[in-house]
Every structure is written in structure tokens, then in C-alpha cells.
Image (cartoon, rainbow, N blue to C red; front, top):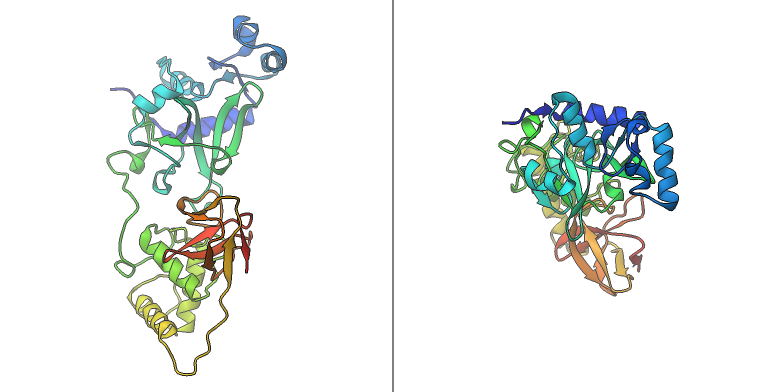
Length: 339
């Protein structure tokens, strides 16, 4: 069985290589470019790419290709030469693995994200969340992107990463390993206490309910993650209902929210209807309705041009919350207008 290295050590290595301003050469696994044969440069590149490759030869301490970061580090530590490509990484190193955007519950330091067209052709590695309070949100990725860019740091949301995996054949993710990593819980709202760090459909339902009652969740919306914004909204709810203000959504808070929701929905004699904000989809053909206010969030459904929806809230970045098929989602301000 292959020796497994802590994924945290791999991430520390990636950060060192980024700080060192390492370069990219196809087929490289961490060599000193000054000691490499001419073929790696003039044999693979021409024009502007050759000029850049020769820059790395002169200026970069070490050079890598995309999967070379992982296999080169493994060779540094163990002496074992794996000699693999990004597609081999996905097919034989990763368990669990999957297609699409990496799920929130598998976003961990050292997780691999891939680009697939007709085949897997590129890989990058998650290092840390952009916002430490939202580990299920956007992440930083370190990658050896190409000869023109070298080793860089980008954001998960900035690229079309459409496959993912935990490289458990060679790296140890601790509690995130294949045997212990669990999907997001699917529970009815009120079925368990919720507090900072919780994730799941019950968290999303809580957020949707709070939004429908005009509680401010303008940064992240109903993203299914119980972060600081959701905790603050729950505290405001608790204060308004004269409950203990601890930010934990427990039995008493659930009962108060359900009672408040029932009162809001009950018809009342002489009760004036509050004005309802609506949005119309203005996209050329259709617009994605996402689970949160930004392109990093998953797509819930598609809304056709001209469709009109109630919009109970707006995010700070202009995205509009919309009630689509009985579920709250978010539409880009570039794709809709308030009417």
C-alpha cells in the first residue's frame, strides 16, 4: 500500500512554491530548470511561449506542470516517482470523486479539482476558504496553470472546474477520507438544533423562511450554510420573541419562528396587503436561478425570458432573491429587472 502524506503538508508545500514564484514547463515535476535539457524548452514551445519558457529557465527556482505539483511533491517526500497525468490522478488516485462543482462538504485543504473537456486535462488544488467563516463557500486554488502563467493562486469560482476528488491513494485527509466523509444532512427544519457551522437542506429552509419574513441575509442568502450572517438573523429573531439570544436554532426558536410564520400567512380582516416587489427575467433566452447570490452557488433551475417572480430581498451585490416554483433562489442583476 502506498505511503499516504497528510494533505495539510501538501498544502504548506503548495504555498511555498507559490511564494517562490515557480514556473511551468510541460512534463516537469519540480526540476531546477537550469539543469533541464533544451528539449523541454525549444522542443515543446515556440514564439511567445518559448520566450516565456526561457524566462522560467532563467528566473524560476523550480518548474512543474499541473499534476507535477502533486507527483513531484510526493517524490520529494518519499522518493517514489509516480509519473502520472491529471486524468490518471482523477481515475486512480481519487476516492471519492465526482463530476460538477466540488460539493461544499468535500471542500478541504488539498482536495483536487479538475477540468474536463473530452478528457481530464488540468488539475488544481484547494488550499483554504476565501472566507474562513464559510468553509462551504469559495476557496483559493493553487495550480500550475500553463507556461504563460506558471504557479499561481486563483479562486475556485473563477474557473470552470467541472470534476473533483480527494486524492486518498497518496494523501491523508483525516476526517474527510472516503470512509468518513458524509453528504450534507437532509433533515426537516426543526429536526435538530442548528448553530454556526451546520450545513444542509434544513439550514437552507431556515434561511428561506427568515428571508420571507424580511430578515437580512443579503450577503449569502439561502446557501444552506449556517454562518455568521444566519446566526445574526437568528439572534435578531430570538430578541424580537424575547427568547435567550444565543444564535442557536433550537426547539424554542423553532416554535417561535413557526408561530410567527403562521401569523404572517394567516388572512386578517381589514389587513392591507404589503406591496410586493417583483422581478422579470430579461436574459436573451433564459437565466440560471442559483442557491445563493453569486455564480459560485449551485444552479437550482432555469427561468425563461419574460418570467416574473416575487422578490422578497436583494443582496448587497445586486442579486435578486426570487420565489421560483415555491423555492427561494437568486438571479443575477444582469439577467433580470425590478418591475
